[in-house]
Structure formats: structure tokens, C-alpha cells
Length: 348
Image (cartoon, rainbow, N blue to C red; front, side, top):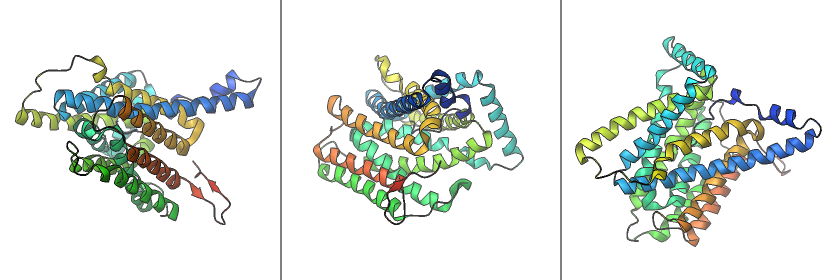
């Protein structure tokens, strides 16, 4: 995951135009069908995020080396994006635009470093997803992201519009923190469950919140999400390559590479769920997109922990924690009307 980076290029796809062209006789029916399809696809993208954690977690276990696993996953995603960029004039123009903005001082160079967070996220997958299980790993990521996002939104980080710390957002953040406690406390003292390992995905969630702010600014300057995402993966791959080289010099090479080809698909899975977001965000909006992604992640993580567990597997406490975390994200994402007249999503 890479934690879901920005969609590849919103301008390259217009689902509403496609739906209109294919359903001119029954526009309302076509619009509803297209929206339902977009929601289904975005839920599948959320499943893809959990799948990537599952794949990278096992690859790290098989190699006994989370650094090499992270580099394989992130690096393969980078190569896929470079191939797409080669056939996208708009993406290449966006990349050139970012370089020009940095040279003229209109975009700070450090705003290009969001990929460091993405690289750390994938590294955390390779190091501890196998120890914690996919569900607890996902809960910790979402908690770190939600709590940090609350603060960054209020500060207007990276030039974004400031968002007041409303009670609903605080309640949502508290619910996600409670979810971590519910999932982790029953396992304290259990063999093979290092509490310190929970810190890595929590910090990865914090990093992802910063990454989203930085990538959003780069995307705005590039006017191309493909260009912003390619920069993100380039920086992350370079950082992981350096960290992995140092690690290998100290620890040595892995004994052997796993023979199962499915374990090398983490980067490809990441590219696919990014592409899905590209198509669906214009149809369902940012709020529903985020909720669908998180729902897909949580449901898939529970399934993985039951059907093909990496770590300790899921318990009833884990299931309750997932519900708490999902509720926290939902509460934090909704703008409540004053006067108790219900809730409305924020304008996109």
C-alpha cells in the first residue's frame, strides 16, 4: 500500500460521460447502475489494500526479511507506474510541471517526500503484519491515520483548507483508539504477540496522514494524479532501496526467494486499487470512496485472519474492534447538521 495513494489521473476517466453514452434511453437507471458498480468496485479496492498487507506480510515471513519484501512490493509497483506514465502524455506533462514549480520555488522540495511514508507503510507490512494478523494491523493503521488527520486538517497542513475540530471528529478518533485497545488488550502476555509491534502500524498510519496532505498538494500543482503518484513511488522506492541495502550489509541476503508467484503481486495489487479509485472517485465522491475502502479493508482483513491467518488470527474481540474502528471512521467523516436534523457528507 501502499496505503491508498491518490488516484492515478482523474482527468483520464469520466465515468459520468460513459454512463450517459451507454444509457441515453434510461439515464436515471444508468446513473444508479453506474453508482452501484462504482461502490462495488471501490469495496473491491479496499479488499485489495488488505490483500496487499496479507501478501507482503507472508512474503516478509518467508524471506525472514521485511525490508526485502517491502522493496520487492513497492519497487514492482513503481515499475508498473513508470510503464503507465510512458503512455500518458498528460502524466508526463504533470511531472514536468512539478519540476518547474520546484525550480522556481513555488513548490517546496520537501513536499515531494510523501513517498517516504508510503515506503514505511509497506515496510511495516513486511515486518509486522505477519505477527499481528491483518485485522489488527489494519485497525492500527486506520487509527493512526484518523487521529493524525484530525490534527493536520485543523492546522491546514501543506496548504490544505483548515477543518475545525468538530465534536464528531473527536468522537470518531476516540472510537478508533478504543478499537486498538479492544483488539490488543486481550492478547497482552500471549506468546508470539509482541506489543511493541503494534507501534509500527500506528506510526505508519500517522505517516500516511502526512503523505496524503503532501501528495494532495503535489497533485494540485501537477494537475495529474498519475504524476503525483509516480513521484510518490519514486521517492519511496529510493528510500527503501537505501534502507534495504544497509539492512542486507548487516544481516546478509535472504537464504532463498519463495517459489510461490502470488507472493510477488503486492505491487501489482497496489496499482490495481489505485486504478479503481481513478475511475470511481468522480462517480461516488471522496467521502463514500474513503468509507468503501475502509469497509473493504476491514471485512477482508477479518476473512484473511479466519481463512488464511498469518499471525494469531481473529477473535471475537478483534471483530468488535473492527466494528468500533469502522464506526469511528464513519462518525469522523460525516458533517452533522446543527439542530439534530441528521447528517450530510461534506461537500466534495
